[in-house]
Length: 295
Length: 256
Image (cartoon, rainbow over all chains, first blue to last red; front, side, top):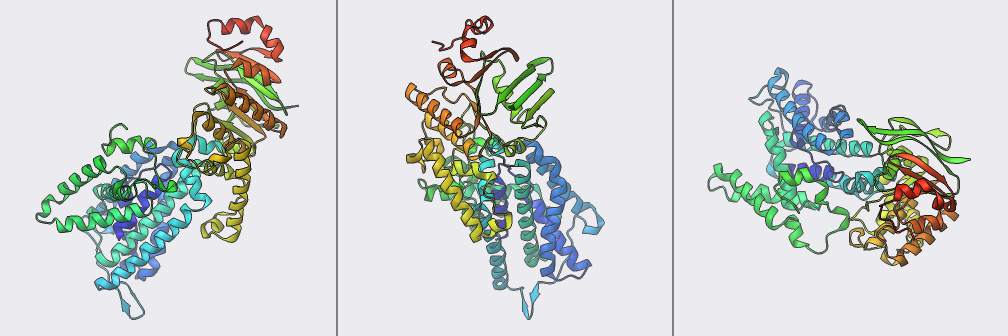
């Protein structure tokens, strides 16, 4: 479910034509904020959630003020650098506990209910995910969502009808940051430990896989389906866990070649809902990266 | 009184002068055409006016205000809309949604209200939809309102581009080759619509290759070549101008 949330946030920024390679880093920011506040400031888990979100937004705002006005490619590169920098920060600064991982915290509780069993955590996660979905849905189906989609389709035309592209993109990325951090807080509730390696670049790439496998045209259902598949398939295939990433890679390549619309694209080949479809030609960098080649 | 005035506007790329010392004014309520051979800098001028490019020298004054260093979305908000030469559309939106996007600047209910989908936001949406339908009908796209923009034939895409610009409720409408690539019937319809748009009180600045159309509808014509103004006047005067004829020599125009 955490992965579902990460996937959602990636698909969210794709709407404004900004693929992000730093999702896992902001996820880590959320996790660390919760961990540190709980251990060092003795704060309640619930209180750390909004703070984590706001921290990710505030830091994101400072960082992206430079990148967003310069367009998609700069944003993409910048994202990677930021992702590495944040990971480095967690690992190298004493305060965050170093590379070996950090703080073990007590599971969250409310009243007498302690979220320590699988069942409790499942419902907690469902709550987080539901909240995330609800907010994204409401945003995508408002006028704001229409403007975001417009930017994703043509930056030039969008600005010619008076849409402030930079501001709209910034808002989108920051909201995405907020929910990434929320996913991080939730992650702490069940992992109880934050290790810098978890929040690395390869995790961010995994996040993109969820979206691609699920169907990049579907901003809400796509990432969820993709995360579900990628969370379970390798588990079942765990004949030899060292081959896991290779199997994943093969699956990705097959999906990209044979199911460019993702799993959902297969189910719903004809009736693609028009509000949630991405034009690949607007994403040349990503397309190259994913090896789609020329259309 | 000029609605838009360009004063000594220049745009250079290194040593290359795309536009140099360009002066001209567009009168309120006019259909003003900007013509010139290929590569004369017409589209560059449009990009300068709409803020997609910044002039390296000179001033662009709109309604008495210097807009030469404003961001494109700010300029759009001041009341300048444009339709593009290449068909820029939101290809994955329906015709109606395309026009609705053009309503971006109008009917705002406020971010929070929109997020919560309050009644106010829904009503603003409804009103926008009604007005969008009106524009779509006016541009002759009524029957196609649910069609995806990407599936439209060329002529209709052009008309849709203009519809989006109209949705911005402009004071000044810049049209970059609105009839190019259209068959004669479509072109005639478009010319009629351009007149009607002007009659609604919208001033029009037009770039167009079809001399027949330009001579037919323009109140005033400015001719540029290699980024410089070489002539200006009424259609009848421009037709007789030696310099203009020379500039076009060897050019493939459908002047007839």
